[in-house]
Length: 469
Image (tube, rainbow, N blue to C red; front, top):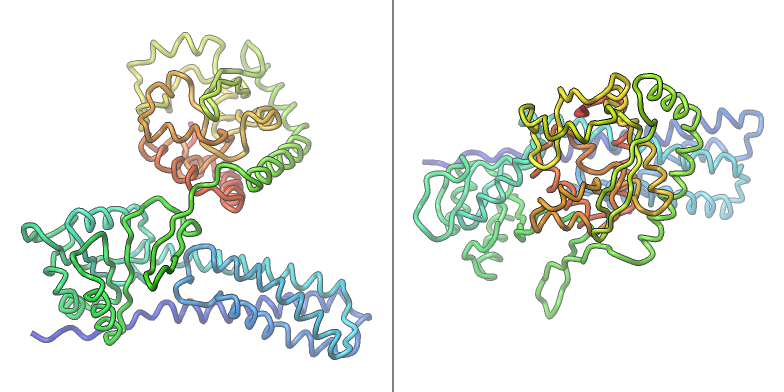
């Protein structure tokens, strides 16, 4: 039986071509737009700069690894390369202006660079959405053979399947040790680790993923890498560490040995000071912008039903400290007393946090406020007081915290937030296991960039009103 002819994985080249052409167009548009604004004040050599800017921009992005295949469509390197290229373009423009005695208008330069950076970021976001949708339908995914023990292979396959838009299409597995299995997690077993190259040939795989300890020594792994190189097949190795963001992982070379270094989560230092300053600044700005609207919301709550405008409740925050949280009242005044009588309604999707689409305690205005999460806005008071952050795990009731498993207790290591990763990933439709999983990922992998991403996604989720009740 002859091996199948190998198909080349063409999407990285097509994706890179779209990026390069898109970056050229973004820079050309930015240059043309800036030149139109400077009509009548065009200095000598200005047209040359307009034409050179796109080439300079793409060269800067390439210099900062913005077009490398391993970064395409994933991770933050694509975005970092754009931001870094913006700084490079500013420096290159200044140097060119000085070296060639071009009297470039500073207004032109400081308009072009932010504009081209913004356009290129939007371009990458659009391409990623396109790629994600295509992969969710089974396209642009690398046919993959996974190698390891039955347990490690099964875990890796399950983790990959959590994201329908992942880039791996697992078509075969090579299992080390134990009884030979016909399938693992629905994937056919093609043999043992020594049969990897045969499995690759007959499955037309473009990638091999080593999971856990497959029984291959360093020498055998090196020989496997050479064999795969001849077949133009990529090799990746999973260390078996899940729920860890890429920036926390790095390769550390010691005495000729490559070691995977896992950085500890950020718990103190200047980065937390930056987070606090960011919280204060944004909280003040949001409060001032929304103040007139919030007064109207308060009036609507008061007219709709009897009782106070604000609802307060004791919650558990960072380090297990209790504090009082504030919200617009969305329920009748005796809602807490009625909770015990709602057993027949039951929990919907969540066994710890009580959530129900037909909760009779919610008022008419309250239902509308909950849909768009407007009832949470008064928690800006808690943010200003330092009891909460804009982004973080949601604070739980003492009764809920008493039900936490040991893993869930890690949610208390950071300040609770007004919004968080699980709110922008499904909100009330997620079960407790999914909620904890997302919160723990945030606790272990927090960064200022992640906070900004969650805040942007929060606006989109709130405006859409999805997953809230």
